[in-house]
Amino acid sequence: MADTPKLVLPDIPGLRNIDTYIANGGYGEAMRKAYSMAPSAVTDEVKKSGLRGRGGAAFPTGLKWSFMPKNNDKKKYFLINGDESEPGSFKDRQLFEFNPHQMIEGILIGCYAMQIDHAYIYIRGEYAHWVRIVERAVEEAYANGFIGERMKDTFKPSGDGVPYSVEMTVHKGAGAYIVGEETAMMDSLEGKRGYPRFKPPFPANFGLWGQPTTINNIETVANVPVIMKMGGEAFSKIGDAKHPGTILFGVSGHVNKPGVYELPSGTLLLDIINKHAGGVPNGKKIKMVIPGGSSMPPMRGDQLEGVMMDAEHLKAAGSAIGTAGIMVMDEDTDIIKVLTRIAKFYWHESCGQCTPCREGTGWLLKLLRRFEASQAMEGDIDLLYDVAKNIEGRTICALGEAAGWPVYFTIERFREDFEKRVKPGLKIESPNRVHALRKGGMDLVQVRVPVVERV
Image (cartoon, rainbow, N blue to C red; front, top):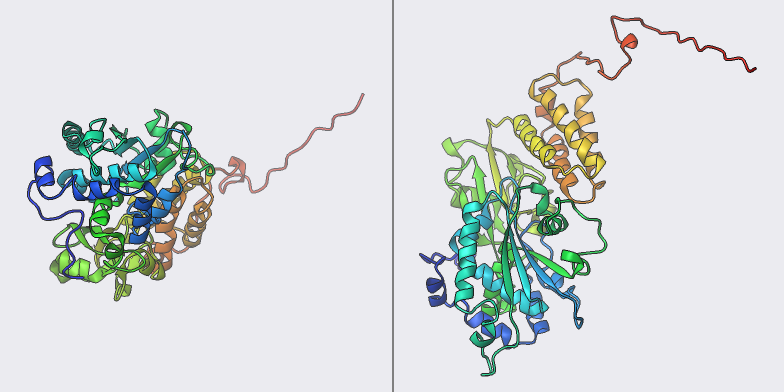
């Protein structure tokens, strides 16, 4: 595993430049091999590789591609999710900056596999600098005949060219966490407010402008040219067998060398923190780690031994891989303050469409601020837990889980931190009670109801 080469962020200076990318095999072997195969065979190769989505859900990529309807005349779209608005996640940005052409090549191969002729790259609005980088890369690919009508002449596996071409559009979002959800992203791209849609119908049947659409993450498609070059079977043997390939781990927080590290899936979490990210400053102990971005269940620092960073092992350990954004917090971290900041983010970013999320995220924040000020009542821990639990599973999209999981898993695993913030004997009068029933007023109000005599 230590000798596994970097597949999506290789150490090649200037790879962002298209000439350097071509000189290192870009837009060559992988695309020509794909275009010499039947489209369904390309999808089968991706299935064989075991590639799983790198955007959070870890859904099998080849299986998702197979959902695209075949043998019909409907317009089809490929939507590439580069919104990357999950706190703690910054690995897509590295691909935009250092290897955008491999992402573009992966998109082109995916389009051929699903017989799609238009792809959109959706990038979060705050990434203005990286939007310009990707736009330039797309322009270079057009100029060199790798995108657009000139593709038909560029790729000639049998001397006749390929009767196939793809158009590609880079779209900058307005900046909203909710559009990282695939259906909200489609609404945003269509010019509407980013509201998640009910499913079914699923995007593969009813997506952008009502047409079949497949959505993949930036890092996911960047793996596709590698799979075509080495073959699906060889790729499937890299890293963990149930979640193969390398993963871009974004490490932040209390580490000496924060950054993005490309390592085989299944790498030990403590190895990533201590060997690659340089360990915790000043030799302090780890109190908490969030392994996959702020919405994933946090883990205690004393329960990290043997935890491997892939979808199945993290699930068994009580968390999830998410976007592989590893957030490390040392022994002096105020867990309540961290959780309050996270809760504020999800309250602010809720689209407001679902009542449990719209109202519940505000309740979470209000309760957590009591703990932050050490003004919590004895029943507030259980109340906070219940509110978080009652958001989960009751919303159209997963923002409900994103808001609820950090709260109730932190209570389960760090309850002692909450108990320290409870003020014994404290009682807070509800501001919604009738004025006359509050203490200091009348203890009992007798309401006389006039009798109305019938005439």
